[in-house]
Image (cartoon, rainbow, N blue to C red; front, side, top):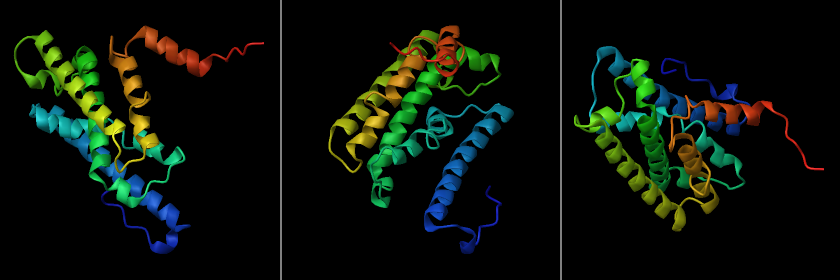
Length: 205
């Protein structure tokens, strides 16, 4: 994507299409750069610092292309000033932090079997496994409290947009998926997802 020729202005159908294309390219490039960094760590067996790991991990979770994009379809106008505001970046960072840490806590065994060495749990300290998890849960709780404060107080981001992250949508889904088990490998979770997607709804008569 970095080597793509920049499209000519006349190739865009409208200014809105141009802005959407540029935003998608920027979002995908950010994710791909972080994914490439993580792939290089794995290939070279390099163990990053916790700060290095989290800086990439928050972005490589792809919330920028999923959750963030959903904010533009909930009926609230988001201006450039809002998107570029520090509060916007902080909300994104805190949600990504919760996601990354919860994924690490529950996915460490699965990722070890897949040959992934760069899991955040193993980067905190080389002591006892249960202690890693306690430290990580503490970080999750800290990020959740900070996120809740941002959601409840008045700020640059409209309240409905912030509620998309907290009350009770993104954060609640993350905890449902990871709080007690690894949702990716849980037969119960897989069964629930399949039921929602494949089984017809039973409407009351």
